[in-house]
Length: 377
Image (cartoon, rainbow, N blue to C red):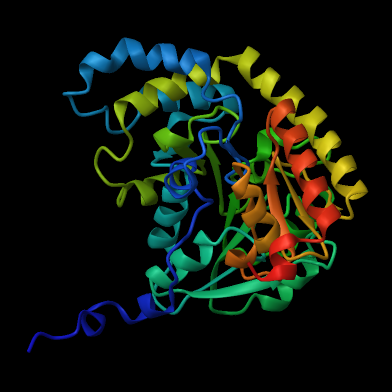
């Protein structure tokens, strides 16, 4: 008799539930046959990819029979110039999630602890268990803001990495410069600080505290991505910034050809597409205000956000609301998968007409008091 595969697999994998992303539009189409679908579930850029990135991809299509330039030299050169760092202080990955994965693999032994906020990006817990580390969560305040003092209560002699998600996914809350300074001054020198800044371009607070200002002063790794503001989520390309010795350590385990040539070319072009970035930021600012005001008028508790999404709650069941909206071709993200109560929802900020249609449908659902919830249908 064959040995059960569960006995052969790493024991820590039994602690992992597979990551479930926001429902893809293709899935809703297969389920409902709805032709017009508005996806506001995965914090993607509603305007699509950078037009300059599309042009770059089209020009380079004939070369996809060749392996990519493994180190992403040109992209690192451009990022180094933009960030005022050195080329060898940057590592490029298959989305910023791969950079986070490589950081944990590089610095954590089995049994080491990884401290991170809760609620936050689910991948932190998954990756900790995947490599035999122990996840330790720090609860955000009831208003979903960071409590820096709480981190020090959870740090122990076994702590190897502290992850800061800033702005935080799914809450949109952030760490300001004053909070970050207090944190950095008191964090033990032996700990690696990983700052996941996937949404930093959207931050409007002039006092937003990026860990990039602490490079070289602490063991800091900053991860960023082309998936959000640049609209390249489908190409999976992100990057990390750290000191040369940290990057050199992580490069030892970076898989060969871990980013595609087309993703690299697209990222190179997207960096210079300032018109597209500004258009995206203007829409995000205006529409975030529109959504927040209208959601509040519909009885939602709306939390302040420094990202391209709004985190909110309602007395009605979030699953009920989201299911009814899917009947109308609108996809939101209920937060049950993040281990939260069933009345929390995350809403990606879309185009003006998408946001207005969402509010119209929500108004109808709430006026009925949640049809599915009442009837059980």
